[in-house]
Image (spheres, rainbow, N blue to C red):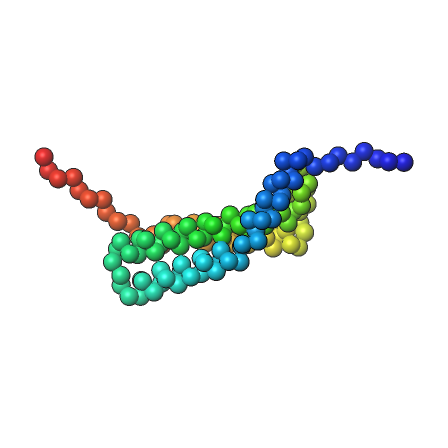
Length: 132
């Protein structure tokens, strides 16, 4: 006797495979973020100009954002293809050891990025408008 088993939608399959592809570059993106942080720390130690520090801070922010997006993609792919259509499957996916590991990694990267955005990007004062 065959039971009805609902298939996952085509959109879910496409998103799942796209997330797998994006997730493959996670370790490279994380290494780029480490290099960007190292460059920022070197410039801070060398007492570089405000503009150079701002550029290095923005580069680190971009690198952290890219690594975070890749980690989120791996997290979604780890939950499984059925989790794209079903919130219960997402919850069950978070309860697995790999799902919990990737959820913790995503939260860690979000915290690092937000802390950097609050304190790590140097603010440059705007040029004042010439008196008329």
